[in-house]
Length: 357
Image 1 (cartoon, one colour):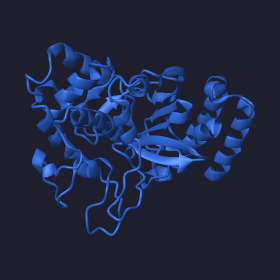
Image 2: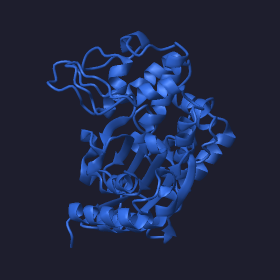
Image 3: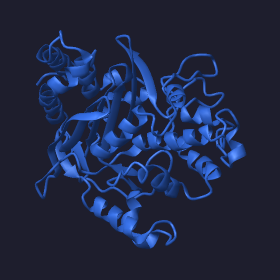
Image 4: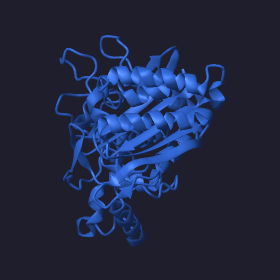
């Protein structure tokens, strides 16, 4: 069996040849999508991922979408672009949109102490900018620390901006506005008894329950052997909890690029590397990871629930191109340890990037 790194290099070279070096960036995704699908399928099988859904976007338009493998192995239900998955940390990109909208409305200040908005951090004072960018707390000895638990506390800042529960803001100010009908603000909404009656209308709860019934089954993969995993039905906070599909994530991506939900200057700031206390650029902007690859800016984020689900979004703004992948095991993320800030460690991301750059 080939080593993963060698396999990625072989696939990337083959993909570049298949797409054609003479093609422009505007049509590389469209014409190369069939080859991309073939190579991603090889990587899926190599990682032992039972089921995966994916989409490629160019100029805000989906040029390829597919389900690969099984959303439910026992019932032989295939994955599709409409299969819902727990997207875990990808929830942070949704939270960043809501919080940055509050900054645009001047209801929150990026550099004001979060304590002003009722957020008490266990590791000491910090600003909204510092937590959105995962800037490390003072005294840690490093400028950067990926800390979802700290990020989760930003739910309280959102509730300071808009006086309602965080998940209600998520649903009404973002999901409903963009018609993300297959995105659910918390898997615990399958239990209506656990939801305050005033939080959602009965029709919305019925829709959420129907989406959750279609969720891809989570699997733990050990040596490419998949066994069904038990996952608690948790709620939603700024760091994690959303259930979504690649089609809904594609709608969010297109809305971002079109300037429909954030001003262009706000988005530019979100995708600019933050600066740590020592003056060193961080691998993060505001709610997103950001890095350079072969002279182009790459914007990305991941999601992972160990032994259950994983997700990956990679954008190349200069090429107006986006890749979205969701999986019902942790194989998209855990082997590559991309939380350190380098998405090129992901074999899936590398195939996409080498097709473009």
